[in-house]
Image (tube, rainbow, N blue to C red):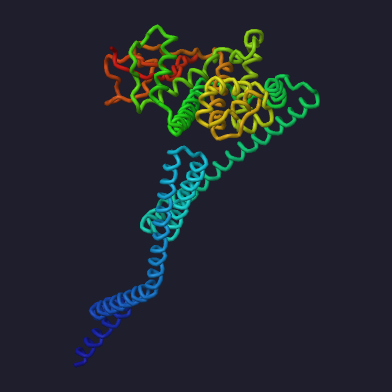
Length: 471
């Protein structure tokens, strides 16, 4: 009995020692084994509670955003109404712009052009409002992740373009103000000196040359751009003159035959037929040919043979600099304002000479019923009529082209296609377009419409010609 009790005591001691040596591991393992099912259930309950809370938050957000979406939809509807109204206004302005072309009305054209530009700017403003109000929200989310800078640039770009345009306009206005001040000083100086017949254009350019260094040089590309302006101005003046002839009930066919006869008398090719080679709807090309021949006559001389000046031969470098300075002085000027200040300058004399050569007294009397403009021009004045202003636009472009020609070294060489000559695509351009864009075989020059030029860099400005089938 005593031995059993001692054995039992030994057993209790061993168990107690084991518990004392490993209390935490046993407790932890026991706890994990006992509580793991209950813990997983608690976790699931917590997840369900979180999902319910998230659903409640989303529902609350939808309830809060609902009125905002309705307001945004209303704003978008108002914006679209403005867009449609602006587009309709732009269409009406564009129709007025087209109507101003026939009959030709420059004032209506300017007003309609301003109206079209105004409506386009309104559309640009509406586009920006659409972008800022959230119209491109899906795209903006993508931009937030990687393209925020690009979005800012898109918004700023139209304003930067407008600013640059305004800066250019300011520069042009500053140049005009500076030019007008110098012209006024020149006019006052000439009046006080009593030398009204002195060459004001040339002396003005020399004074300006001493004040301001040349900021640019004449280039063949500049000459090509000036020739484009000459052709546009020539077409515009021709259209106005032709519309006046129609209004005065001219026999356009007879007028075209007269122009053809004048052209044929200077060429080796003669058309003995009494019928015109120009179809009725191509009369404008014959009239433009007549105007071009008259206004370009004497282009190869430094003063259009208005005097016997030889400055380009005696001092060529200085003469080229003077010509380009005059070109820059006059580029941004209104010819009407310039001739109002200096009516007897070289440009004024050129305008008078060319107007009298183009507009015959009988033509003017037939078109306007009197010779008032003819009388004013012969007296050394310059009328303020719409017709004469259109002519001044053409005269200015030719004068500027002439100044550029004598500014270049070497000067461009002028050429003109003769009547009956073979068509050469390298040097000629047909005013009448053919099907397929290619001139058909067997075409020859019926008459030249405007001259061409070969430039010092090897490029060619093609002569414009009216082609007819070889007979």
